[in-house]
Length: 383
Image (cartoon, rainbow, N blue to C red):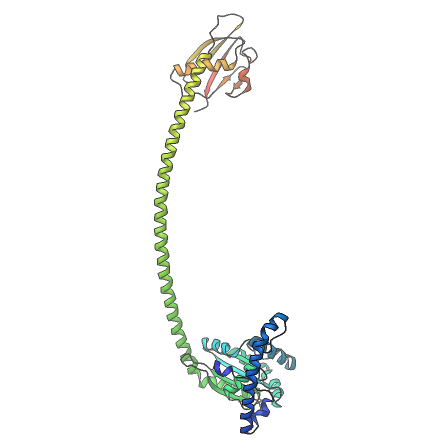
């Protein structure tokens, strides 16, 4: 079909060409071929220049020709008409074949006397339009355009306007013409619908068989796609499983290495802390003040440890809470309570708390309200 649709378009009146003598028609056809070849060559040579200058192509595209046909039809006869497909004929027929549908082809020639009457009385009839849109894929074209003219050659159309009902069975290489309606003969909408219905009923076997074949093809295609999908999903699942196992193994290795590194780091940090605390403790022991005798210049403190043990100690009233903490840290170490190295000192009367990093730790016994005597509760902040 494509090779026939590509035939060149002769110049001149199509209807007049049909009535010429055989010899003259053959001469005209030969001249048309020569003219078409020359036009094609000229178009090929000028196409780069047109692309640079923005000039339109000599030959419009199928979509442009179809749109122009619909626009001209609506301009002359109104917007009520069959739903003509915008596009070239062959892809339209192939879509109808894929849908297992009948399709109509309308060939329009403005130079024929019967065209206006046929368009107005038949193609614009409300019932005809509804019937065609419901049952057919409809393609239309003006024979002054290349593709529509090629269709006239393929279908051997002798007079216009022309309406043909075709079907393209799934197992046939080409469309089959079922009904030819010559606009010059049939202008009655009811008769057109009647003829189309009768033809559809008579040739319903083509559509039924075509749909069966298409369904079988679709089932085979669906089965192949499903098998391919399952196979691909299986491959993906296997790859994902292998990847998951590899990631899990890598993760276990990473976690083991991380745990080992963290354990080593923790051990090193703990050892460093112990060494630091031991060094701090030695320095605190060296800083512990000598206990002064009782007197007005001496502060007497009772220190209550978390385990209930009490420590009694005298400090000079000029001593600070830092001096008291040095004594407490040393005493805690001597009593096996090395782990309690962060603690607060709590005074009940008046209620007051001294935290490790408070500036109050630099206050003297007298200025901190602990002179001449006080009871301090030691609270473990590590607990």
